[in-house]
Image (tube, rainbow over the protein chains, first blue to last red):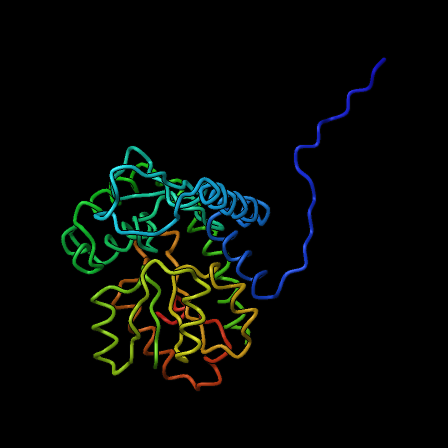
Length: 174
Length: 115
């Protein structure tokens, strides 16, 4: 009988890098790739390869403002960066070490945390928008999202509390 | 105190309340990486105030002489979530501590909310 061996789809690769590079890779992995360093490195290499391929075809790779985009262009898609969710205009997914709830686009404000903060302070959506310099529509979406993802948001805050309470106990005992 | 408010705490109300208490609040960076936020705050010798303790846990470990980290969490009972008025008061209580009790330490503001 022929033995079937599982096909190895991932391979170990190690490299010596400066401390600063290591820190940057880990930070990127934590922020965008659930802390998975291999995903961060793989995506970085794919991004680099995209740039090299474009240049080898005689293309220029530049950054420009949305208003200045030419009629025809290729756009690099980087896995793991802010992605739209279809259902929401102002909320985006973001790979984060421990939060899975949606975030306000372009801001380090989790939607559920914003909704909870507005409720705790008794703010109307208009007040919350003013307090954080956000579009009113973004706040309204965040509040609506928080209602639909209440269990997830509560679970994440429970995780947050666990870490905080560890320090709280240390503060009290110290 | 010289403070840096993480983005989800940087409301006009909290900034105004802290200013009334003669605290210096640095401008909040928008959409920046936690590592960059932390480095900025340390360069400015500012105590960081955050709702996301786990985000800064590793950074605290690599910066033993940091200027202090104040963590505030959302309660499991929503009625006990701290308002910005209560957070400002808790910071006032922390400010009354000796600098050596803040620098290099992580303090939880919920424990300073008072009775």
